[in-house]
Length: 100
Image (tube, rainbow, N blue to C red):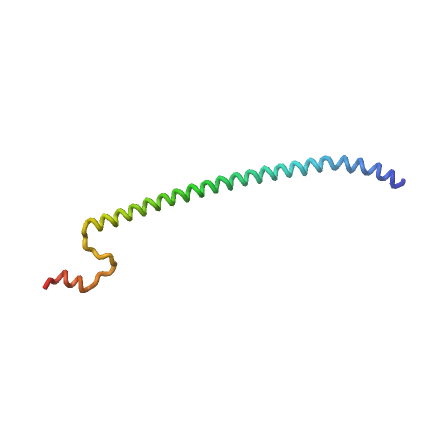
């Protein structure tokens, strides 16, 4: 048996078995691409939800800031003489308690 007969016998067998291997490889790549597409869609949805959440938080914070500004302005309009400092000066308290 020479090299030519060996090649004549081996090449058809190799070609016969390469077709299913190629089909398996193509199928695997298609599944992988479908999974990648699904992952990208889920990431896109997640990013959309993050953006929506960010906008809602900003809107909520803006409303809270507006409410705080309104309350601050209302306190100024009420004319209350409360100090804006957290700790009152003791001399002012003594003057208020004992007017002499």
